[in-house]
Length: 156
Image 1 (cartoon, helix red, strand yellow):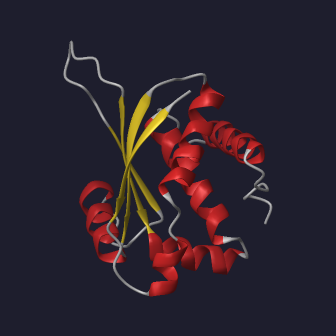
Image 2: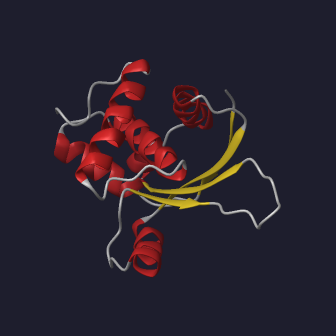
């Protein structure tokens, strides 16, 4: 299974937050773990690390929520008759990830991994609006993260 990751580091801000942003190879490994788990190959995803202003602006425009959030997923929809291996875009807010990891007592790297896995699952069509959907998505996240050596993020 092969994920092609278009890695965009657009965060400018506190150095400790910038230093915690994962490397392209880590992001690619996390995306590959999702694809492998789902039996999917050769997909491209853009992962953009950004600040709270950009996250809040996108969250407000596309979800009607006027606050920054940890990860936003934008699935790609090809025009009819066009085949493309592009899953879509993830926008990950570095300050929110760092803050949540600290509040939840998690390693920042593990929280980035979780939010990347979570976002790629959204790009594949999984959701958590209904209880049954949430259970399915969370169980997939837990299994994928376990393969990466990361503890269940819902038990911390």
